Length: 183
Image (tube, rainbow, N blue to C red; front, top):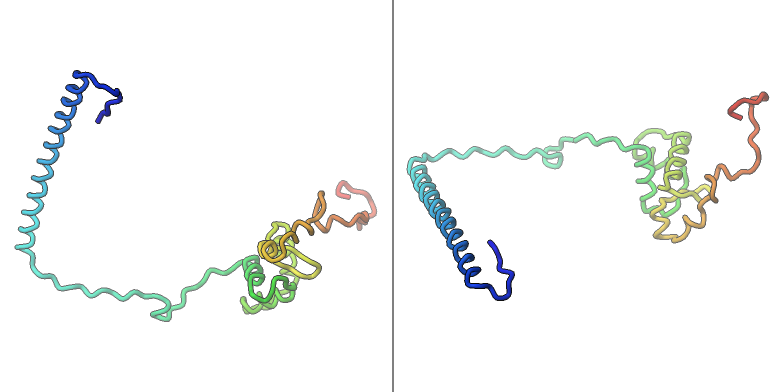
């Protein structure tokens, strides 16, 4: 549908618009007639079907089987070591935890003996990714530190040029007495 944009339309503009409206009105009348016929046909089909319908015995619905109702245990996807470490650090034991506390939590959750040699590399990876922070022998989640000790992460970032391990300025002694490309 067109809208007149002129402030004072001429007589021809008004007549042209009236012709356009008349055409739209004829189209709408045709569509309305079709919809009425369709509705009447649908109503007659519905009544015919209703008259000939026989009562159908209701089918009993099957009960929904859930672990809570049936007692069936659904196997859970195993959590990764990193996920368990993060879970241990979110426990309400305090912001800072030792690696031994984390190891004890992992052992309790998995039901297995957890060696410290398997936790240390995971803690290092989490520190490199910025997920955790360390303070001496203590570990905490970085996002909790920002909430509870604002500014701690900025104050304890390693200086430009590397991680904490690279800050030792002593030269590394090679076990190989002869020089190689890798020394």
